[in-house]
Amino acid sequence: MKRIRFPVLVMTLLAAACASPPPLEPREPPEHWFEVLRASEQHSDENRIAYSQLAAHGEAALPGIIEGLRGADEEMRFNALGLVRLLGPRANPALPALIELVETGDDGTAFFAMLVLGDIGADAKPSVPAIAARLRYDPASRAYPELRTYAATTLGRIGPAASQAVPALAEALEAEDPQGTFRPAVRKALQSILEL
Image: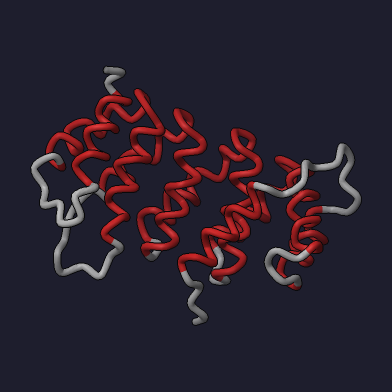
């Protein structure tokens, strides 16, 4: 399986967020634009046009986006994550697939799924248990140390809707913090959730 490096993932999602605004009328059906995404180089004009067209399709593109989130093609999965970010609240039907990525995805996939869930905000409430599970520290794990910090940040971005994570966050305040970034993120999340 081809590994996508962390900086490439960041650039993919940033490129998706910076894609030109979608035209008012999509030119081709969503299936066509998914094929363009599969065939085009990331950050190419074709790729940006496909993003724009799929965003213009909105909810009609969701079946393909959800298929991309759940599929084995890692590049397509990250394209789908970028599309969910572009669609914003219109992509709420993709929440179950995003939750699956947080629960079972590798660290990079879980990180970007949480990034998208944080963008969704309060509507991402169903994802709170899966994100809270990522707060646990396992020194034997090969996980990105930043992953649990980002889990706390995501819970804070979800805000008061993440109130069921307060016990896990309170417990996390006592966890080991070798990088010194986790506890501040937990405190900030608690402030956001409890509206302090």
